Image (cartoon, rainbow, N blue to C red; front, side):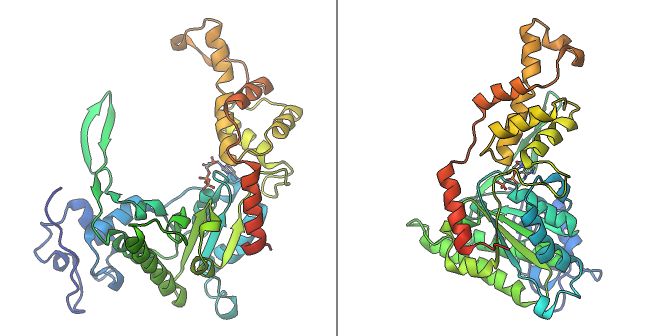
Length: 387
Ligand code: ADP
């Protein structure tokens, strides 16, 4: 896979410029890697202390695959969850915007846990925090750290098929200690991109109490490295927030709970009144918002509230799938009438109706059971931040 890329060398504090990183000019480093490293160098061309001794390819991986400069999600895109939005604004967004006020007694916690059923908007909240606080967003799934493989991105563009690029991803087996190195690179790049939000999805797989045999030693080392990095920015003045998300909060151990000081329950979209969207309920808002984007919203208020009644227990992501399926109804009907797909025009299709949703509900069922909900509520009572 290209030439060998030596690790970044720390030249005894005498500064680490790009040519000094590789030791022999820029030749041994791929162009894309060099660009990434250059962007992280200070105005003097020096690489920040934290990034020295890290492998350039890992810095590149973090910059290209994990860092998202503009997550493009705002509070208004998220239905409901008013309690979470309020807590997060106070705990995270204001301190990131005004670090001068939020110091001393007012200094915020650096760790936030979002827990609840899958598909309820935890990732959206993480992205919205970065968007609202004008912070750089880093997204990593903990399972990608713990897995034996690492994706090194779409470096090789092999061929073009029907005008579409066929992209090959390089999956390379991880060496021993690769996960730890990636964690160091992640926190290192984040500290150069402050204010920063590091979002760790499925954080339970990294900070859980149970460990499968065989993986015990390596996952313990990874966990330790992660906790060390967290400790590092917790004690300093860095503007980095760590957000962990999980569908299995009960798997987290005591050390994880201690570091994730604020723990917010992200429930299913309910009939709460939406402050950000006027008086409407969360599921109704999701339906209207998605259909309106395509100019397909024609449902009456009664029909919308009927759909809401029928979709009790659906998550935000279930609702999205339901709307997708329902919007196919008019298309399927037009085709059944004998209109050819190639000649089909907008006028051949009637608006999306209540019956389309009723049909779609046969296909798209709620993905969370009521017993699972009970588990979350119990955990919330015991460990959640209730106010
Ligand atoms: P999670 O991280 O909780 O598993 P995501 O934030 O990835 O869930 O949500 C998945 C998708 O479901 C989103 O891209 C969005 O389309 C939809 N969704 C989930 N919750 C909401 C919500 N509260 N408001 C609007 N859309 C939502």
